Image (tube, rainbow, N blue to C red; front, side, top):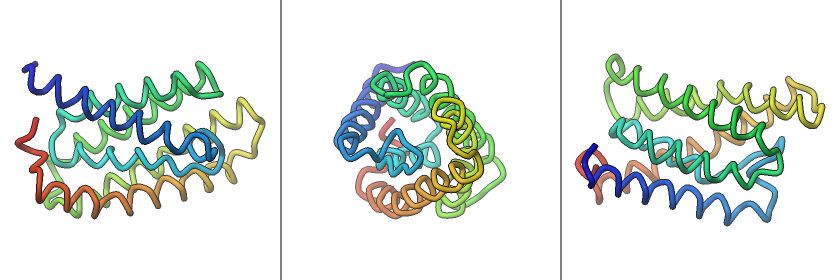
Amino acid sequence: MKVKTIAVNGVIAALYIAVSMLIQPFGLGFTNIQFRVSEMFNQLVVFNKKYFYGIVLGVFITNLFSPLGAYDLVFGVGQSIIALLITIFSTRFIQGIWTRMIFNSVVFTVTMFLIAWELNLVFHLPFLLTWLTTAIGEFVVMIVGAPVMYYLNKRINFKKLI
C-alpha cells in the first residue's frame, strides 16, 4: 500500500472519529435512535474502494469509546465491514455515482439489523422496533450525506485523492 493511501486513510479515520465524538454528548451515536453523522463517510467507497481501510479504522476507534463495549467492536465494526464490502463488490455491476450512493445507503440501512440485534442483546430492546429506528437514522444520514460527498468530490476528486 502506498504511503499516500495510508495517509489519506488516516485522515479519513481521524475525521470519522472527530465527527462521531462531536455528536456523542447528544446521545445520537450509540443508542436505538442513531444519527451518527460520520456515517456519511461510508459514501467514500463509492468513489474508491481504498477508503475502506480509513472508514473501518474510524469506526473501530470510535467504538472503543462506546458504552456498549466489546459488543460495539464486534457488531458495529462488523456491520460496517459487511456493508462496505457489499457496496465495493456491487460497483462492478452498478454504474453511475448517484445509483451507487443510493445502493450504498440502502445496504447500510438494511444491515442495521446487526446493530438492532446488538442493542437487543445488551439493552433487551425490541428487535424490530430498534431495527426500524436505527435504520431510519442511518438512511437519513446516508441520504443527506450523499449530496455532500458528491459535491465535495467535485472539488476534491476522491477517486484520484487516494
